[in-house]
Image 1 (cartoon, helix red, strand yellow):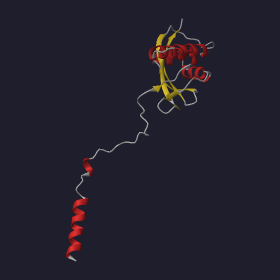
Image 2 (cartoon, one colour; image 1 turned 135 degrees about the vertical axis):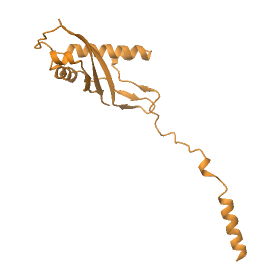
Image 3 (cartoon, helix red, strand yellow; image 1 turned 180 degrees about the horizontal axis):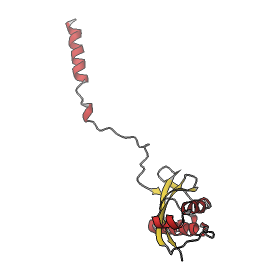
Image 4 (cartoon, one colour; image 1 turned 180 degrees about the vertical axis):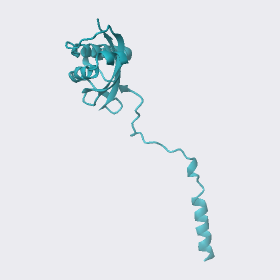
Length: 155
């Protein structure tokens, strides 16, 4: 019996000599890194540029032109000359559909054009679909948000 107890004690001592709390835990490579190689939303016209900065500038300018083209203020009468910038936050879903998220609008603009948010929402609703943002390391389209500054000038 003493021999069996001796082997059991030796077994426990030799089996517990490794300190697992100090070992590094390896993260499997299947976990997605959401910070590198992401492709922002784009428009086909802008994909011709190699530089990320040129593609981004092209995307923003083209999107601005489309929004300005869709803004209908034909029935709005403004009693004061306005020259201000407002910022609209857009949501681009994984299918490339653009929708209104929120906006930062100066109180003067809200005062003289109370329906400005409705006008912006209608303009954005009529925008065509674009190429959504993509997680390039796994090739999956994802939703993203984008802030777009608009200059509003009235005479």
